[in-house]
Image (tube, rainbow, N blue to C red; front, top):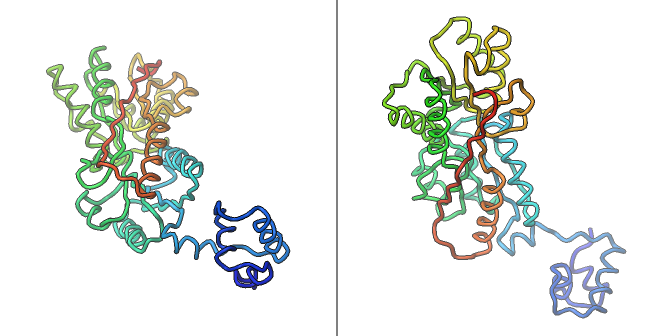
Length: 328
């Protein structure tokens, strides 16, 4: 195997000069650079990127921790984050935890071993304090979940405010027997949404029914199953804030099967403003999550931190948008 020492000897230059050519250092003459590159090409020399990264103390890799790529929201979030990382010269590696604490802890151990330069946390089964303890002095930035921002930087949507707006809209239309769906009610994000749901009722002087809070509802199939339960058992429920547009689509499918007219008999609001909300009949009222803006700002912030730019702790909160369509 040809080494950097061989390239230096064959080129008639020093090892440090070859290193400068490899790293595109400006203080190398064009003649010398071309001579070294020619020798490298003739001998199929490939620089040892791992060694270079070790010297620079960077892996040029950012990890993304998610619960499950099968959930459309997280697959979309990973797509935008990865695209922005790529534009900034960083690879991404995705770790799925499937909401298992030990799997999540293993990722923090990898961060401690400097196997990547930073970790983007999209969801967690652990408390903020525990995450911060694992992270130590390493770079960890949360997005999606509404953490306090006291322990690490956070980029998130104002889930409480926009959920309160959507709930208030339904209540003002006389749809007062409302349900609420979540995929993991213990997460900060879902707790913020639930708080908005409850506050909207409080402001109207209305009570909500705790029996209409449905947990572990996350996909189309879950929406269909929940719809069958609601419509066949004739529960006294008039509408629902679904946890996602996919859950909403499942509910609409079940409503059609059971001759329930949307929104005349039952109102539905989804979440994330996914394109699926435009292809159902009726189209789904939804909440736009600002995922593109958040991903762009998040990656820029992380790259600056990796490169040593001093920054004050950040908690950036984005305002969502309630989009009214025919399902409500």
